[in-house]
Length: 231
Image 1 (cartoon, helix red, strand yellow):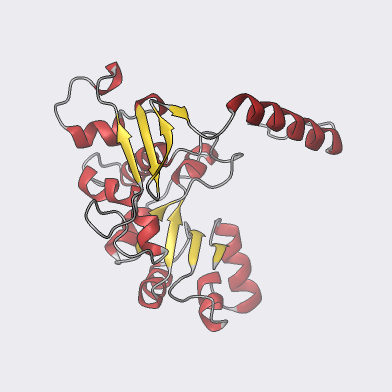
Image 2 (tube, one colour):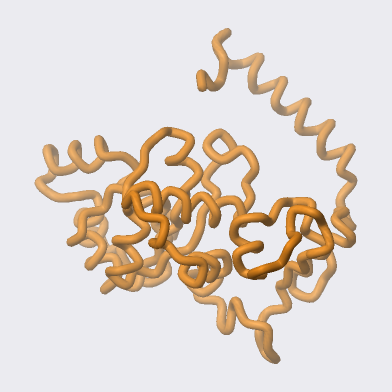
């Protein structure tokens, strides 16, 4: 099950006013807070909420870029990890995260955590990088995120011979802080190559772009005359 929860402070305040409970407590009462549930955001979960999420076995998709874009910085990620909550990364929707890059989201998660605490040493690389593949683990895929026999053959091969990845003082620092789309050499999904040398293998990109432009035009023509975004 997937549900947005505690996305804003106003949502929590409204829930407390109307129900006397936080949104997380409401989910607990209704049986939604359980293993197999993915909570999008959770950004304004209280410390008690985080304990409930941890004990329930639910997971949280942390959408850091959304909050950086909204100018809303808090220490949710650090509190959640300290509480033992299973946290993965979410890219949210295209309006909130224009690139939909999980690697960029990991970098933003580090930035927002450091900014929230005004401390460059929090959210270290070893703590942030595993979040990139933790989504599969939270969803219950066995052996996900490992390169070993019996694990899903889902792999992303990174090309380090690109200027933004040089010099390589620390390969893990480069992966978190320097990586961009142009470094993606090969993507393998369940044993099938879907990207080779940075190019989609089974998708006609020109057709996708043309179809996207058509759909966007149809949507905007049905909307009011104002811009879809004002920032």
